[in-house]
Figure 1 (cartoon, one colour):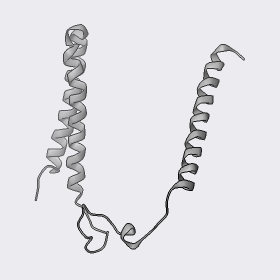
Figure 2: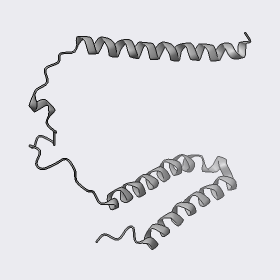
Figure 3: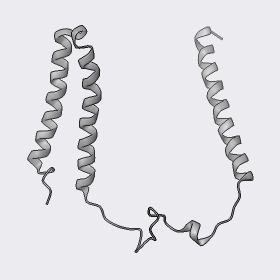
Length: 121
């Protein structure tokens, strides 16, 4: 076997060993754990408050859209901070690339505003 494939064999062996170890530990845990199901343990837990009503409730999509917009601009910050540190080394190419990146995000924000996603009713 060539040295190139030996490294893959080593990685595959460790991955298989890891999977076997996880299965063994889960098996040991299932044998040793105490089982004492009660009605209180099976009840839905809502921050220490007794559950009221059914578990089904509808949530507005707006919450998810706001969350998605937050994640997008949070990711923008993750990219901008390292760029700001290395801005001198990147030169004009880095400046143009970051400008295009920010422009793309602003285009998405403008589209969200145009569609009325950010309007709360």
